[in-house]
Image: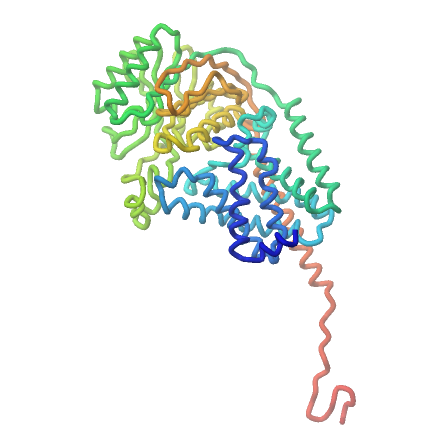
Length: 521
């Protein structure tokens, strides 16, 4: 340990170690999918932060670790954004600076049991504050939230129905803090063990008492994934060919992926007629996604459009939350040069104004989202409150076809399904397409990135309301309250220490006519 401590005295080596330590949690996400390592992946970073020589250095180590985490999480953006990927990681990594300072404040030096007990609730709250800020759409949205790594762990999905992905992140950080204390702070192991027991108890309580979705029906939904096809016309022809294979299969709804139609259907009545013919042939409505300049108003929109046997039904949802740089450039007058060094948007897409619930035959209600939007828990929660039966995400990650992005994106739908108690269909152009039941469980098999095919899913329908839909982001509110109470307590404590400190002794003043020991001399 002394040798390691000496090695870390170098500023550059310590910064590199922090960046590597911060990147470790990414192993819990697809494609690695080592979901269990999220329980200990923060421990090396925590141990490094608690040994920082100063609070300022701890904040810097927090920044470096955040940079490592963001770069590892978004490394698949490098071919598209180039240098902007590093700038994004530097910007977002800075959010972990205060968290690094907080770790040292609570776990550094001689740590008492009381401070460890406080750390077990305050440090996870600080982590949630970071996730809350970076979840803002303009900063890239809630992609890679720590709790999202648990998408295939059934107990975690039960917890998500109670407190959303936020509760999972909170408990994972608490477990990591407890493990770090067990490793490094022997005198304070009792509260660490108590924290682990409390986490296990919370998970068990959620498993036993949280309401399960009441399954009361079934619907057949088909996903059409054309695969990598160059050109909008060729893609449409391939999707048309695949869709015709669904005739006679008793499908209730057919879903195409994001940007599956590259022309405005109001401006191309021939394509609208071909889609209507497909609907009559298959006996099902078709939900397509149009990425084109609108003929009825200015600008380019990404829109989910429902087509029935009689043509366009009038049901349309325009994407509301756009991908920074991918679909618009923030402050284009300053950052417009990004188009010359990467695959940034040459023209900003226009935003929709409100979510839409679409009515399919026989009373089926679906709520469409487009690509990036499936990362936002509040959007699926809102649609559930509006009475949807099935959540639908239309996506395309073809730009990142051979990276970790398709698998990461598909996994998010499991969390959204578990949070809301509604099944979710994740349909893509080039994979990964997947479907999850109302408890977040996988339905059927994935369509991988090498598939050009259709897949029909028997999807159970469920009703009722999960605690997360009812109470919203209560975990975040509780975390912010914990931080506020801790900050207030620290402020009061500091004030009391200042007031109780003895007054400094001031030596008697010398004068021209006397001395401090013998006045008058």
